[in-house]
Length: 324
Image (cartoon, rainbow, N blue to C red):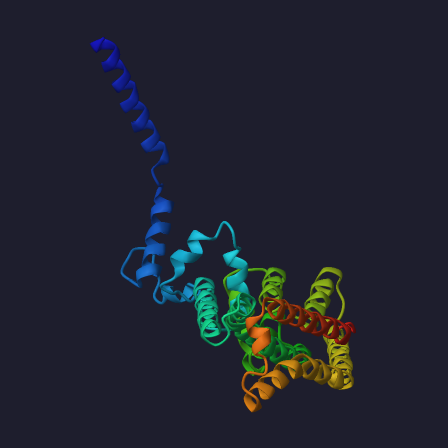
């Protein structure tokens, strides 16, 4: 019995020794680990680390609520949510946004509990308040994308002039990054930096589309990629691309002008019932008391709220039906 146990432990030790030797890092792996450690802590004295190596890491926002994102990552795509936030250039994280949403919903529920203690009103107020952090991110993202689209024709025109002057494609992108208005300048600067790190131009441009989901940018990137694969005069391709982008933006501006009345009508029809009800109750307190106290009044309030939201949805769909 002792011999069997001794043999078992001997085989076990030999197996562990072989696995440890086989899985031990090589000299290249150790050098890579030392370099990553130097980048993480910012120590230039570690072997294999270069001065300023910490600048190679992309700066990402962190918060004290990151453990929440790790807990629910199997239910919610935190990476997609964080990408949506980064497109808005807002200094927050996906987990912090979820905490803000829960806090806003709780505040809306408490306020409605004191002023209108009706379950439907409380749930509606919570839902409305919960959308406020998301609306902030969506508005910032929309404004940044609009600013990028507005600056894109000027940036592409600058790139075409640089190529016409004899610069290479990489140098033209650098000039475009330095002279283009924000946020186009910072985004193309990231493309130039990725090229310097060895990333192919096609992959760098595809990552740019992933960061800035703009239809005009997609037209430009498609033109550049097709030209590099099939050949031709890139300057002429960019000139025609700029004309297409500017014409498309002009048509979109005309559509927004023609549909301005419809958008205003939608806002008025959506907010008018709520504003009128508030004003009537200010002038005649207790006017809506039957709706607040009677169970049938609760059902009417929920029905009216649902119909208002449904009408706003259809008006928005009709206005935004035209796409260029």
